Image (cartoon, rainbow, N blue to C red; front, side, top):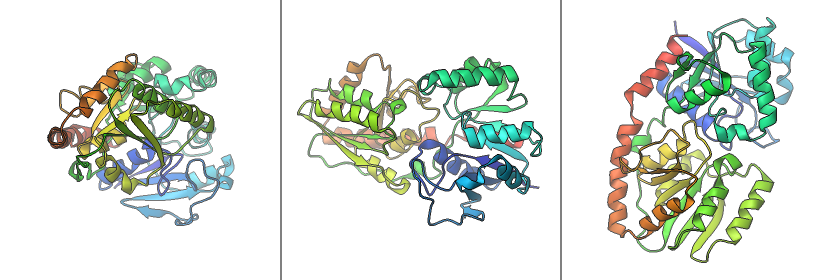
Length: 383
């Protein structure tokens, strides 16, 4: 009998403004949908929106690939209505995709602790929330909650999942868990990512650099702009992604205005998921010096089309230069980031094209990792 996984996530497709967690779940269902039945529960609107989706059924399960998705309105998120919904939904396992979500994690866990919903195995995937960059945002509030739930043993019996060995170490340190109590299974890429078509940018013009992510402090767009202040070569810099924090964007705009004349930056807004590959392929480099990634789907998508990446050491993507995929550098040395950009700007069109082809070939080995697929399958099967 196929196991039924009740998966809670704050935002999901057709919305796309929330970043990589939704993409992680979509990819997981695409790869494992023949082994498990995924029932995805999410809000009825995109991140930051007050308007519900108009192209989904709000009172029924919506098929999406091999999974079914249920979109809940704000009125359906009370303790009582959540309990009735969960009890009416046949499931063998509950999968949380946030440690800190007040509704789809904390409220559901509380219902289980109070005996108002049936006890089943629980899988907790914090999705990078224990990283230093993420924890630093609203740290006093997060620290107080972490200390309280540890004291109350609120998460006793939960199976902890990390998306990389680095995230496992962060989780163990913050939650005071033994490292061997955390299961590691790397996030899965877009199923067709390794076969994505890479289109070499035109030969003329400055180096084309793109930042493609949420415009938020933890993604460190301001760091990218500070890096560009050190660059000596002509660069075209596109900022692509939704704005989460108006005040933070004002800080970034101020940095844009002080860029040297040979660095031309422009904000392009967000792009739909089906436009990501083409957007990345039109650029020579993805610049994403983020303060932490538990996976970093845009990094995988970039190398899949042959666009090299320049990232911080705070992601699972390491030893990129060895494989010709890019560079992972320490954020304490911003001039080193700038040196990489200047080096790329000096490459000939033929050199850039050759590097793109090498990156695409090397990406295949990284993205089609059979161990990652088996680890994810085992993660659900053993529970």
